[in-house]
Amino acid sequence: MRKQVPPNIFNFLRNNSLCIIAFFCGAFAIAMSALLLGIALALSGDEFILVAKLAVITHIPVVLIEGIITASCILFLKNVKPEALDL
Image (cartoon, rainbow, N blue to C red):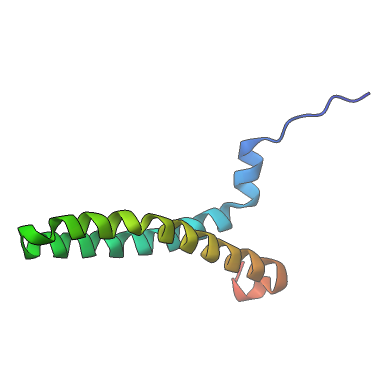
């Protein structure tokens, strides 16, 4: 019997690098908007500090979901119409 080699993380990253980049781009956009919202609220006065913290914390699931959706769209385009991505 032939010994099976476990999947290599570098092969995974090489094959899916476009999706990983898309995930971080989508997540980064939402994370920065949440951070800027928190900064704007915090600079508006001391009474908005708690709201600023809550706004940033509650955006964490939105950041993850946006990253997943963006990566899924890029993966779909890569499989269906790769010329749209100009690869």
